[in-house]
Image 1: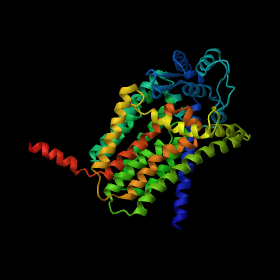
Image 2 (image 1 turned 90 degrees about the vertical axis):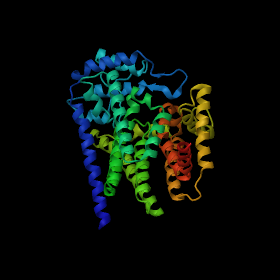
Image 3 (image 1 turned 180 degrees about the vertical axis):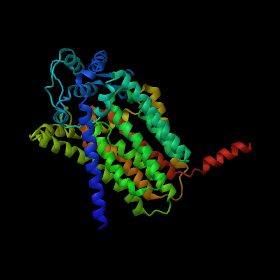
Image 4 (image 1 turned 120 degrees about the vertical axis):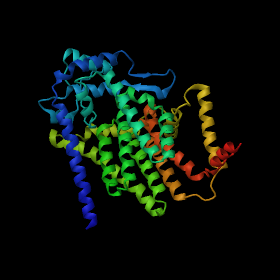
Length: 433
């Protein structure tokens, strides 16, 4: 009976969330094209002034900004049909010409009134729920600034909550994660923004739930998180929205409920992963099913080829090199390793310092279950890089930021294996002298 109640709760949560998200996209498509045209034109001009994939710091791959995806997102937002909002949302079409770059295609569509001729229905493009209304008042450059402010405020709020509740290690780990993944570049591209936005909001809400000991809401919370991630994201750093909130919640649980058994810890880790995965995969499946029903056409042929491309693809190297380079290229993008010799030295010193502290000042007894959970979650980004090796290889300049979760996991493992009394003792010795 309890299983049936839980199943009904999750099904209702999924259906209600699906209807709200799909309905929101249809409502934003009702905004007249003429109302957003001036700001879209300003945005297209701005996007054409720079490179589609330009580096903000010369020679630093991790500073590369993706204007290609932003141009497509605005092109889709511009071409929604307010008279047929449901079908236009399903098709997610835009104007395309193989002879021009996507930013130039966007400018041509706005300037010369070209209609949509290219579908992009495999994604929800749910971020247009935010972008299209904003285009009534702001161009894309102003939206970048707004994104930066919002992300900074959310990050500060998360850190304030952690510090207020004496979760100092998670707070420092979050700062380290944001710094080592060069998060200051994120607001310069809409494509990069959405998973950060969901991650930070999810972390704040998740920490609040954990501090309030509201475990019964965790499953639906991660289910909805997976759905919103799929709805908003353009396949960038999707695992952030699962792993960062989950790691913070687990840390709080482990430190507030020290009597939790190994099986209890494992359940607390596995259940959210399963719920998030169901939400993420279910939302993708529902897009394709709804599109097929509404458009009265089998849309899977539009989807299957792109799935194969993300999983594989041919770049002229062997599979082993393909996979290993996909992982290594993402690691190399971490700050400060890309900044020449000094950056490599600083990064290496940091790694040696972490290894030194963990080895020299290790505890005699450690909780292996906690460490195992942290390690498994910290490895998820690399599993993703291996499975989607084509995507991770070609787009390492933004997929590398998924390693925020790995950095959090390393910090939590370091805390578990280290006897921190050496630091307290050293501090006490300084005060006596």
